[in-house]
Amino acid sequence: MATVKRTQLMPGVFLTSVNTKKFKSSLLSMTLLAPLKGETAAVNALIPYLLRRGSEAHPDLQSLSAALDQLYGGAIDPVVRKKGEAQCVGFLGSFLDDAYTLDGSGVLAQAAGLMGELLLRPYTQAGAFCPDYTRQEKANLLDRIRAEVNEKRQYAVNRVLEEMCREEPYGVGRLGREADVEAITPQSAWAQYQALLAHSRLELYYCGSAEHDEVCIILQRALTGLPREGGYEVPETVVVPSAQAPRRVEEAMDVAQGKLTMGFRTGGITAASPDYPALVLCNALFGGTTTSKLFLNVREKLSLCYYASSSLLRYKGLMIVSSGVEFSNVKKAEDEIEAQLEACRRGDFEPWEVEGARRYTVSSLMTMLDSQGRQEDWWISQAVAGLTQSPQELAQAMETVSVEAAVAAAKAISLDTVYFLKGMEG
Image (cartoon, rainbow, N blue to C red; front, side, top):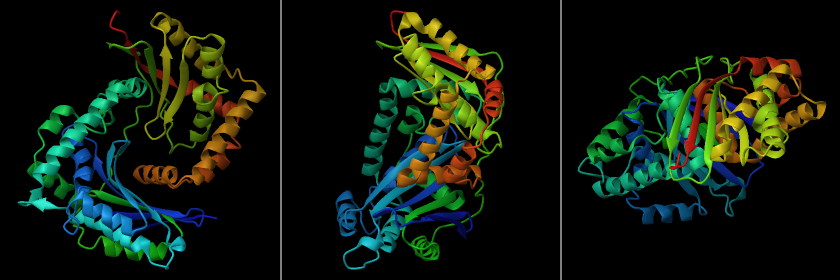
């Protein structure tokens, strides 16, 4: 049975550890939490990639790879996420668990030391980031930003969120804007890196066989010298309970299939709300599963969409419906999506629909325990939101949610923004 513990190691530095013998690898992450702002999003997104290029002791990728090979082929990857109004940047490391080393050597201590070295003692030239590394990683970041347009389904979701949250920090993309990337210099990136180190909350996460107290000691040692100058507050997530009149946004691109994406407000219900389990069940019934109303009616029965599903942004109080449609079917599809939500508001559910939705959500939460990566993302998200509920506890709550509660959650949902990506011909 896994044991989850949370400790403050030093000012603005917190460790969440999951002690378990379930995995042969251990996972360790270091995540700096910064306010999500248009003017700093790009440089913040660049920093973990610059740090990963080399340290004082391992100044290039070749020597870093050699150091990782010594740790039984471990991996350290840069990570950029957004959680609510926070931009989360740092590293995710995966290593052989100490319980499985051939000679009993402590891989965790060495791995934590290497990650701390990358975070605190990067390779520099003339008192700033290496110009060559900066130029190369800027080009890579621009490629990542431009690549988001190529995945049209996700692009449409990003666009509806951008439009819905245009007056909220959440409307800023996690990677920032192209123009801001172009303007970054080794010196400006270095100055922002210093500000992040000194003033950002640092969230540490560990999953493996080591005991919590041992992990605390190892990480305190690895982070010796971390500057702490105050101001570690995490931005409060902005939750707008309900929509005004729905906004409509159309965009034309060279696409063969239309992307109809609809953004809803959940009446202020978020992961912190007592009604959240009811909203999860409501979403599963509406469009979150292959037995949902969107899948069985809009996609299968009426053939109005190539795909149609709904998902929750649990900390923002948002529900997004994503669908792929023929250009000529967009109005019919939109009307039918709203009709299926109205059916949820009326409680038009068969017993097998409710049971299927309940079993799917419980199973999805419990299978999270089989993935170290999904658990890490859960607990980092919970830390940003100031919540402590585990996946198991939410799964337990799902078992007793009534249909009436799910109907009440459906009634709180309101349409905010409709985004349609259409073809160039109109």
